[in-house]
Length: 344
Image (cartoon, rainbow, N blue to C red; front, side):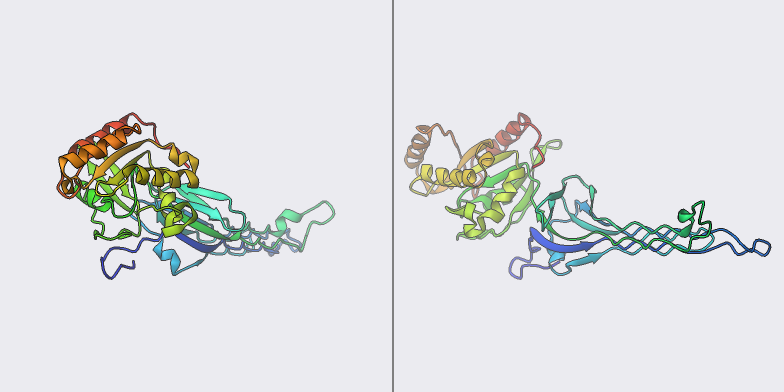
């Protein structure tokens, strides 16, 4: 798997287009019984074998579609031809392509959703193999007891498909760039996203498991920063926004050092709404980060401004750990009251 030379982390690829083709079916056989004392034996041509299928399987050990950027053509094995003595041809070998959990599969030509692979080891057929041709035993009629015809095997299904990886996380951290999303995730989970004091440090979503105790945990995703125009693709916004769709709860992080927190809050929510109105209705918990950089008086002013708009945020310092434990327990409690995520 490829790595980012600077971070030494696997490169995240969340979309790939590949060509898949099922194997051709084997031809049926024209054959007749040839026995010593049966000079006019009947037909005994076997059927051709079915062509192999191209199968997609969800593998929980995978986290990227990077392999499909370099190898783009996949064709299953062809079925063997039928033989005499009613021997049928062997079926062609299937090809199994392993993809990460959360992969959606689309037909490129029709944009039809073929499969949504959300369960470990769930499978879907991307291209079916062709049927094997029938041998001449199938063509006997009252007027033709020795047919010299057999069917050719069918061609397998062939098409271009698009693979899209939508992360499977219960909680998505959203917010403008550089508000501390990566710092928070690195503090409360074992994930180690790249952290630096400039926008778009995180260029792909990062997953982390947050453990409340020995029996309770949840998966959180650090979604790269959203900016105005993200719903149109600005700043790779559409690439990022798609990963929020599977979350059950959004943690909206604000930067306490910025001048207008309400404006920042509205900017991000407006991008959600413009991309998909359903996203704007997802439940949110709001947290104001970097409180270690402000005085108590400044924090009180920020709180009043948000409270006046009906927003009651948590105040935290992801860097120092202040207020973080209370926040994650609130997230855990909130998740208990939410329904299971729907397949989207």
